[in-house]
Image (cartoon, rainbow, N blue to C red; front, side, top):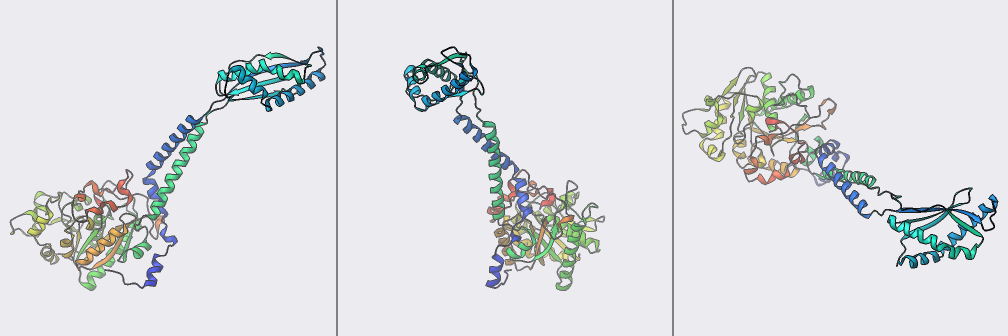
Length: 501
């Protein structure tokens, strides 16, 4: 069912808008991949720490303090202070000229003097501090001792009247003056790694071609938006059903709206058998089928739910039904005795007001089972017994026998879970449904946290269909398993149990 749109309309639809940005989708992807963010942060922190540690050069300083006086033995404080200042200037001149450095290298037989030599006056005193900083404690100490031995050669020529007495003898330093700062750099690396991975996840989430909001259903898919089902918080282990007293008002109203539309289809077009399918597993098709049946049953229709997902039946699980051995639908399709009719396998439930055709176990060879019994004739027999039949089908993109199930129905619905399957996969599934010539009513946009009235919705996730699934091995569309949404590969994926179908 391809949309017939003008080229100008197509260009307008393809134009980027703010609606293409789904904050909900981005947050969901970030939460799912929080482990990757932490892992990236740890890797960067470790790398920064190692890099800083390996490139760190410690600096050790050895110092000596001289008491400066004049040769005439004067105890005049002003004279001594003046001499100290002048001697400090002389030391700086000697150091700047490299003359003392050359003498020290010759004295210690070094080819290179990897050290910093400095002199400074202790304020308002006649004390002069001479220091040497080098990369090892031994080097700083030996160079300082050499300076002490060689400085008179140069200072006497300029200030012969100055006398330097060692006030504090030099010693080998035991601690480095500087620190590697490796911890600080590890913190910086942690932040950098986290930000980079976060940015990558956000970009990939934005570029991911899934259906992220209601507007994109009409924009991206080759069908119309039929109903939007909002996000619903799980309150029990199995199923998200409107029969649960704790289910939210928006959740119930979505299915009331779906029921009203199905009623109109049945009234105006005579449809009785409605197939509910999805492109992939974990999109909530069984939940939609179950709640549609419950909503119709409230209006006192005679309703049958048929689980024709023969490989992976889940209707019994979502309704928590106890299916007797003689009521297993899978046995009907595998039996050789054609005298036993389908009505013998109907399981009645007066409490729900719904009848069921269900199984607890899947059929290994579905193609063989379908060859033994025509689904079309089975459904035609059931139509005479019920007002409406809701059929749960296999995922379209994962099996090759979907045509038999859909062809037996009067109309189909495709369940599209928000931000789950790739647009290409959904449209391929829509094409597959269209080829059966069974009318496609539209898309049920499921599990939408970005629905029109999100304020009333809880924030939890469906999921876990593949807990019961083995679809990756079946069908010509099995390759599409890789196109499922990001939630497929994360330990934080949404959990729905059987109703994730």
